[in-house]
Image 1 (tube, rainbow, N blue to C red):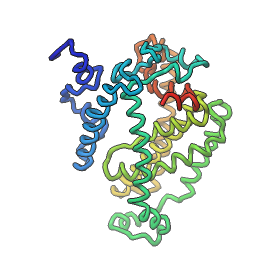
Image 2: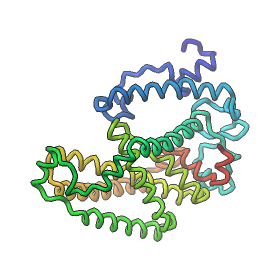
Image 3: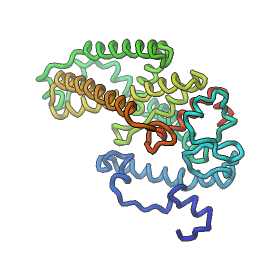
Image 4: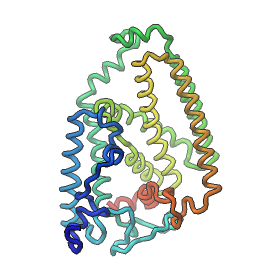
Length: 336
């Protein structure tokens, strides 16, 4: 440490602070949010860098040291939760979830978390507006153009030698998956099944705005926080339905874009659409079986896997999302 007794320097540059003094040469660490930086355009990387400097290096310290909402009672960045007086609330996540009397007045977030949530929600709204203003005309034109009348490039011409995967194949998979989701929600008591008619359109509407940005920048756009907030508002803080809603809203968008990405890649590689469809469907089914089996086995055989006293990361996954879900709609307003 340059000055071990300097609290401000430690908060700004320390490992448990904003980490401004960190110099990392690990390729995985540097590129974990970019996938492959080779594919990201220079203007997109510059945009990320400028945004990081403005919001992380300037905005968060300004808000914290201005003591907005008494943020200085807590660390500038942390994954823990605090009482209004600055004391640590608890490390026992299970206790937080099972405490039905917990309210937003009992939980206070750190400055970095609150600013991050505001920025993510603001970016999500800006993304929708950007899509309408900059791509609205093109989207309307594409919706009105049939596949038979579209302009064919060399890739479409070469792919015309193969049979297209019938549209009813995709519709059938969607209907089967939707029915299975209804049955799972109803018999598993995850959430009222009719809320699938809300979360599915939500996921569909987020595919285009986030997909356009990902296609142009190769930078993934997450709808997790938006789905989480919407679920918490609908279910008044009921944890299991909120989390179920969030997972459906987020994963539907992610997996849909993954399917589109693979189909586009197969199009450029001149792989038959029917072969690609069958392969992806088979691989998806196999991966579901393997993941469920491994998860079920670990939960049954490994002690303290998801307990706060255990050494495993399961207990620390997305804790803030769970706490937001528990405080409910009205109390969440007081939190912010």
